[in-house]
Image (cartoon, rainbow over all chains, first blue to last red; front, side, top):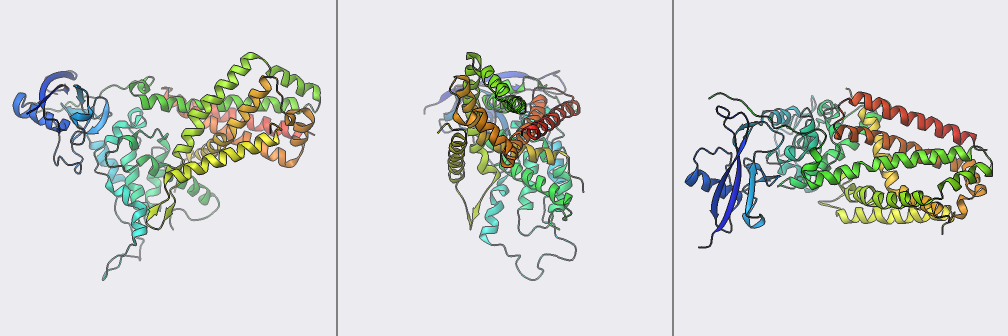
Amino acid sequence: MNFRQIDLEVMRYDPEKDDKPWFQQYNVPCEHDWAILDALNYVKENIDTTLAYRWSCHMMVCGSCGMMVNGEPSLTCKTFIRDLPDKVRVEPLENFPIERDLVVVLDDVMEKLQKVQPYIIRKEGDPPPQDQEFEQSRGALAKYRQLTMCINCMCCYSACPQYGLDNNFIGPAALSLAHRYNLDSRDQGKSARLDILADHDGVWDCSFVGACSEVCPKHVDPAAAIQQMKIDGAMEWWKLKMGFPGGDA
Amino acid sequence: MSRQPYIRPMSKTTWYMRHGRYKVYMLREMTSFLVGFYTFLMIFALSALAANSPDQWNAFLASQQNPFMVALHGFALLYFLFFQTFPWFKLAPKAMPIQLGEKQLPDSFIVIGHYLAWVVLSAFIFWLAGVI
Amino acid sequence: MTIAKKAVVWGLFAAGGTLTAFVFPALMAIFLLIATGNIPVGLQFEQIHGFAVSWLGKACLFVVLFLSLWHAAHRLRVVAHDFGVRKDKLVANAVYLVAAIGTVLTAFYLFSIN
């Protein structure tokens, strides 16, 4: 059995003991097809049971295992040691407060995701069909399908410097989620969401760095979604000024 | 167990040094200095033209002819091409997805379209200016 | 329903960015030619003055300069923020004021070309 020795440098932080985070070294014999998550699990099982971190599905669908791997926001179940050098630094996701070790506080983004009203909104008196399927053509689905792939791993928030500079910014995942519903042919909630999006902490805080899309493990492309919403938002402003009703009234 | 979440400090002035992609972003954004400079240079040229006499205009042209300006314009042209024009074209498909049935128009179509339009427009400007 | 004022400036910024991306390289190349002493025929006084006298010429020049001014202004505001300058309102007022002054100057000079 061939093993590759990986030197893991893992950020530790115990809120009851430490003033600030520090790094612990672990030397891990890795099988060649391992992901960094496997290396962390090896550490937890064989070297140091006190290491705390989130993970679940190990197949890039739950979004739990997001961490910084050599400075890059990554899903640790999707980051393979074959693509990494022998020295790997693992830190909690950037731009979030550290709860303990590799676990971050995600309350802020959880709240933001809810703020954009991520569900089908129908107008008063125009409910969805009650006694048959709510049909949607494949073309209509294709418009927003990519945006449904978000697994809420929050790597995009880690990559986004604007969120890092000002965490009032609603952020890439929340905005992509809003756009997903705005683009859904069954939804009539664009005007309901407009206040949040058109706010100065909404789309306008984004300066199109594009890092969010670069790191997204599911290729959701939040940067594209946000630019489309900016164009939309700018046109909404003109529509309002010229006396047309806003949103999709 | 008591909670004491730790907030890692982020330098507001040097955060972009953390990663190559942020440095490239800052270089891209700094093309705005060039846009500002050339805009006011052209306004200055307009002021010379507004005197409605060849003397003022020729004086302006003469003021532009020196090695410093050659270096500046050469540098600006290259910097602007690689950090504004080309990145802008590369990002254009993101802002304007064009859907055809179930598929989306490939990004390369939109990017190549931009390049073609740029070549045609530049040729037109050169023709207007009598360069070609 | 309130839409932040940023919607307007962003619109100008985006239009200006598109315009400058397409048009500025050619303009810079022309400046480069002038700097090396090879003044293009169209930049001789009669030609360029004639162009600027025409309403079409004035319109073109105004649009290019107007959009460039507001593109640069908004972007510089963002750059300042990215470099850590905290006083966004102050920066915004300063850059938009300069853009406004530039706009007025442009209009004034264009009108003066007869």
